[in-house]
Length: 202
Image (tube, rainbow, N blue to C red; front, side, top):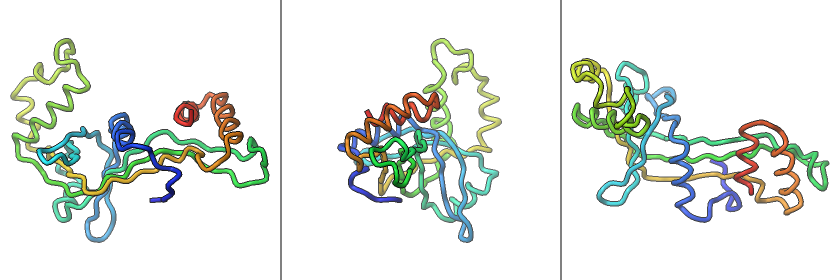
């Protein structure tokens, strides 16, 4: 990961807020020969010791599940908005253009859950996105036999985070004149990611 003190958040709470806003992660493992990866949603929780834990689930009949059984060490990659930044708007435009982006790397060890733990992981994730009181797709409205039929093919997991790192590259290394010009340029682009980066820069 690219390291620069200028591209770090002022507080850990900012990093956690970003992770909660971008929970659809790329989960990366290694099968002993090649990296493996999958895109899945996770939930952030704390365990009894106050450690950050990511909860989610995946299909068992996959290369990433098999790889993580062999080697539980994993990287959870949280990504947010990103956009090209043209040097043409700098006060001295004869310079390198760049790319602004926001990302978090959470490394740790995965533990697969038993059937009860997997059931709970699926329930909590569904309840987060489907209103239990009003949605016709709420977890408790699904047929229990249907859930039990699918459950053996799914593996719930928890990833206990051991290291947490991030880059919020938002042109903090530039003078205020350049930052103002970048924000103005991105704000007028109409690109959703560019607008989000402009907002983050503000």
